[in-house]
Image (cartoon, rainbow, N blue to C red; front, side):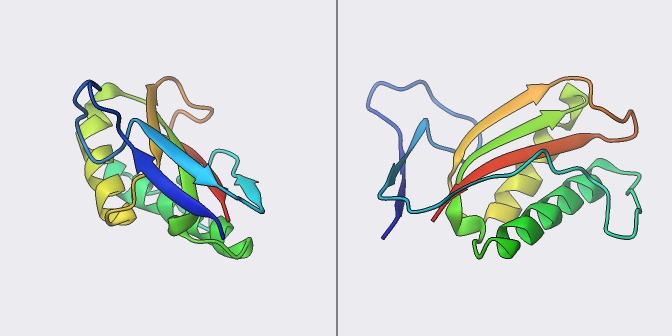
Amino acid sequence: MTTIRPLTGDGSPPVEGSYPQAVEVTAPTRWLYLSGQIPVAPDGALAADFTGQCDQVWSNIETQLDAAGMSLDSLVKVTTFLSDRRYALANREVRIRRLAGRQPALTVIVTGLFDAAWLVEIEVVAAA
């Protein structure tokens, strides 16, 4: 059985938000690497605001995890790409709400995205 355990060693710097410094995975039988999930809905719609786009990305992530027989409980690593630093707090709020206590390893990068209308893109690694 796969066990995913968040770790933060003694003497680690403090973190802002809900994530560990490391995640240990024992005995995984399957790994899933999701391509960057974009904020576009299945019908092609794109929310105008950051929270709407971020929620759509998380819905797209859950769709791909479900297709592999996994769930958010399977997440090991989340890498978030933001188009602007001003979305950092809203991103954290949506992530904490959507992950509901789950604590995968986390990286947030502020960068340009493929489509200028996209405010966020997220890629994940999962194990089961």
